[in-house]
Image (tube, rainbow, N blue to C red; front, side):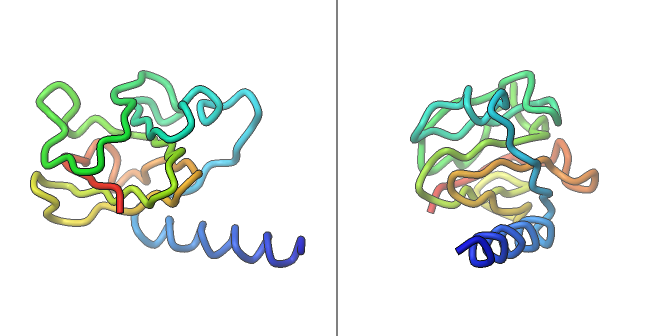
Length: 119
């Protein structure tokens, strides 16, 4: 069972990294615990600080002027992948955050999210 879980974690990390995200290690005191169950949280700080959004909205065509191009880390406590896009209306994929995981944007993708959806 441990081997399966380790393989699943490595696969998820490879997918996240390949899509412009890196998976951060979880800790009990992390922001993952602060982001409510069934919600996703978007942060301006790469260390899960400076909360921008807490939501469960499935379709967001534009993140809004106040939060546009500010996302540096994400916690996804939903049952669906969170699909990120560089432009409005889901144009130019920026990565995917798996269900019940968290991610830090790589430098090339940092502060470069304008829309997203859960699916």
